[in-house]
Amino acid sequence: MNDKELFKLISLLLQYPDEDICQIDISDEIVDVKDKQIGKNLLKFEEYFKNTSQAQLQEQYVETFDFNDETNLFLTYSKLKDEKERGQVLVELKSMYAKEGLYLDNEELPDYLPLFLEFISVANDEAALDLFHRFKGMIEHMHKKLLEDKSPYAYLMKALLLEIDHFISKGN
Figure (cartoon, rainbow, N blue to C red):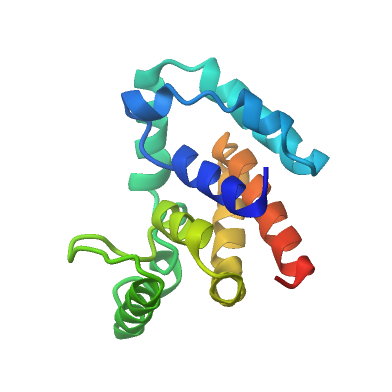
C-alpha cells in the first residue's frame, strides 16, 4: 500500500460509521502496510471497529468528534474557532483544492480531516507536503486529546501521524 492509498483509507475510517463505512474490511490493506508501527495501530483500530456494534460506533463517533471541540474533525477549529483568520485559511484551502481539480460545494468546509486526507490522496506531492507542514500540529493536538480521552480513534490518528512523518521524511 502506498502513501496515498493509506491516506485515502484513513480518510474513509474517519468518516461517520454509516452502513457503507461499517462494511469496510481493512484486513487486506493492513497486511500491505510496510511500516510495522502503522500496521500495529491500524490493527488495534480494526479490532475496535470490528468488535463494536454499528450503533455503538455511531454513538462513540458523535461523542468523540461532534461534541468535543478539542477532537472535532475540523483542523482549524480547535485553534482558531470562528475567528477571521480561520475564514482566510478555509478560503486558501478551497483555492488549493480547486487548483488540483477538487471543487467543493459551499456547504463543505475544506479543513474537515476526512476531506483533507482525500485531497492529499490525489494531490501532487508538493501540495501534500505544504499542507502537512501547515496542519500536522493540529493533527498532533487532536491525537493528544484522543489519547487523554482513551479513544480508540487515537490508534487511527497515531497511524496517520506516523504516515505523515514517513511522507515528509521521504521529501516527496
